[in-house]
Length: 316
Image (cartoon, rainbow, N blue to C red; front, side, top):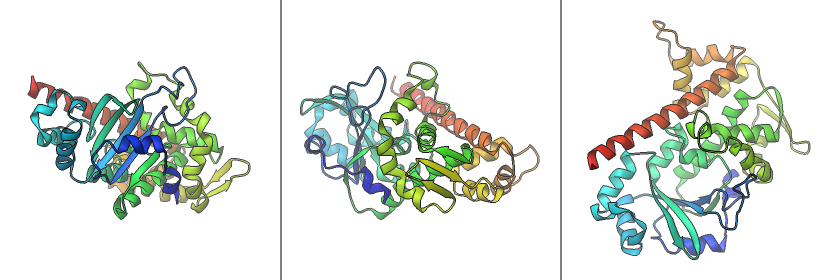
C-alpha cells in the first residue's frame, strides 16, 4: 500500500514528537530538512524541520499544548485554546502554525489541523495546502487506525496521479510524471513567480526519484489505464476520449468545478458530467485540466489572503 512508503521510525523525529500532547490522528514531517533537495538551499543538516499534527479535538489539544509549550505561541496564547482553534479552522488553510521553535537542538515549525478538515482537503482539494504536501514524499511518524483518514490519504495520491495523467502525453518518463505531481500544488501560486526559486519543483523531484517511486509505485502498477514499465522508468496511458472521461470523472470535486466553469458557455447551464464529457473529446483536454488546476490554486490563494486580511481587521 502506498501509505506504508510514507511511514518512518526516525528516532530524531519521535524524540521531538514526545514534547507534544499525544492525541494525534496523524503526525508527519516534510521539506528539505527531511529529504535532500537540489539547489542553493540544500543544507539538509541545518534546515528547519516542518511538522504537521492532525488532531480530532483541536481545542483540547491546544489546551494541553499551551500548558506544555506556552512559549511556542504568539500573543494569541492569551486568547486561549478556543480562540486559537477558531482562528485555525476559519482563517487560512485550516492550519495553525507555530514557527521558529528550538526543540531537541533542532529548529522546527509545526502546523496543527483538524482531522475532519484534512480529510475534506484530501478528498476534494478545497485548498490543496496540506493535501499538496502529502502528494510529495513525507515521513509519517505517527498515524492511528482511522480508516476514513487512511482512505482519504490514499485517494489524494490517486487523484494526483490521475490529474498528472490528463496533462501528460501518451508516453512519458517517471520523472515527467513526478514533476507534474510535485507541481500540482504550486500551479498558479504567485510565490513561484515572485520570491521563491522557480526551479523548486525540479529541486524537489530530481534527488528524490526513488522516494516518489516508493510512494506511487503500487498505484501505478494497479492502475488499469497505464502500462508501467518500471525497469525502463517509462509509462504509457490511455488517451482515448473514453479513457480521459473515466479519469475526469474521478478528479476531486473542486477541480471538476473549475473545469466546468472554464468550459460551460453562458446560458447553456450544463451539468458537470456533460462538461467533462465534452472536455474528454477535446484535443486540448490536457491544457483545460492544467488551466483548471491553475485557477484552483489561484482561487485558494486569494481566498486565504482575504480571510487573513479579514481576521487582521477584526483584531486591529
